[in-house]
Amino acid sequence: MAEDRTIPGKELASESTNCSRKSFFWPNRQLASKIFVRLCAMERNELISHFRQECEKFAALCTAVLDHAVPSCPGWTVQDLIEHLGTVHRRAAFRVGSDVDPTGYEINLPAESSEILSWFNEGWNNLFKIFNDHPDDFPAWNWSGKNQTLGWMIRRQAHEAAIHRFDAELAHMGLPSVAAIKSLPAESIPFGYTAEFAKDGIDERLEITIGGRRNLSGSLPGSLHLHATDIDAEWTVTLTDGTMTIERGHQKADAAIKATASEIYLWSWGRLPAEILQCFGDLAVIDAWKKLPA
Image (cartoon, rainbow, N blue to C red; front, side):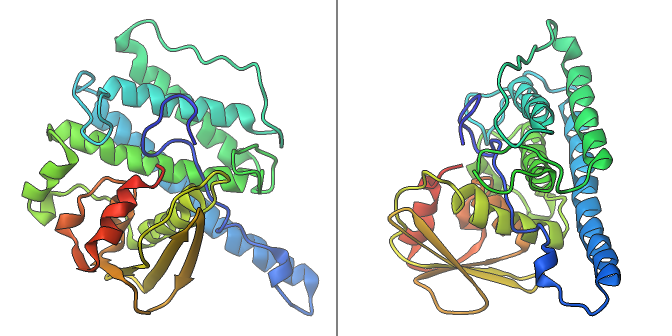
């Protein structure tokens, strides 16, 4: 969903982790409500914690490399990356409190490069405070046309920060391109995600940032199975004429990728080359993924 610039990881989002009281049946409604709130709060707090951690890591990585190229965002320097993510945070904060797209907000970048990290830290800390101060069902507009709530935004912003932190890692390492990751030992690839968080990121990528687009078009030339090796999670995806179907569990497909959840998560955003993963079947299906929107 292009807003400022069109690159992987723009401000997109998901609704699948939001809980619904309608799914609970309990003879004591008051007790059920308390349990519901507790369960949702655990998931919510984990996502908020990931958001904070990823923003802190991002800022630390960017400190001394403002002029470095970002291999996963061609044409961008680290300063461009900071400006992008800081702008996303400010726009998100502006949308909190409204279930329609608010207008008239201007984002002012700092005049000096030396001020950019202070500007960035101010923005994410403000959003972090908003996340903690309001419930998940607090109104907050988003581009999806559904679920205009803060819970949706929290999840999206956690993954937005996580993907761009990885971008900053690659820039900090001085890699010339994403393809250059193929030359790295597996243990030196800076993943930094828990398997649970990466699994949620894959769900969000499939359901929302690709499958949830209102203007999604195109097709994959076959079905694709994704198999996480470090957590119990599998997905089979088909895309036909702009309609994505996602099925969970083990089943046959025209092509398959078997890798850790973090590897699949980053590959799905174009941050890892498929060549370092275990790929099977019709490789044209896997290659066609590159043409899907980011």
